[in-house]
Length: 238
Image (cartoon, rainbow, N blue to C red; front, side, top):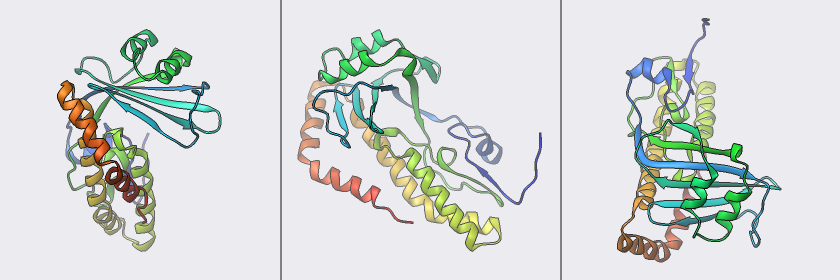
């Protein structure tokens, strides 16, 4: 099947075929973590709505938050070698063993989640590199700047990209010029967030007990600065 148009926007994800056609095949970088994501109707006792709970251990992490009014979304990350396929179903017993001695709400959430609602995914990103565009073809979202989910900004960046690119196309009748303008506006911000997401992921990789203790003390000490950095990310305006 073929089609014709004035321009093409590749929004086809981590292993973008449009990116490969523009710049050649290059595999994304595996970042030493496997993640697990789950959905359940179970709400832990004492959970405060609109509040994210996140816990870090030695080479592991777990977080949970409300999704809508009556469902709980949780996520876990475990340091692991790259051996398995990118997306597979997972045994609840495996997760229950990993997190059995963690904060009580965590094994409760895993136990309450139907196994079919748990997804296992390896984590990848790419080193931020310009350019994303060639003439009347450009990239958007993970096709342009895949990042780790440690700051929760992957989908947000794609939405911001879409808003900026639509404004550029309204201002420029020539799509080549519009895509150049879009890339200039978006590259610095997305590069920063890709790099900060990777740094945050490296904090979670620590397994030595002394390094873990130092990290935990650092997070407590820098709590206000960390909170302010998130605010600066979230207050971005196009």
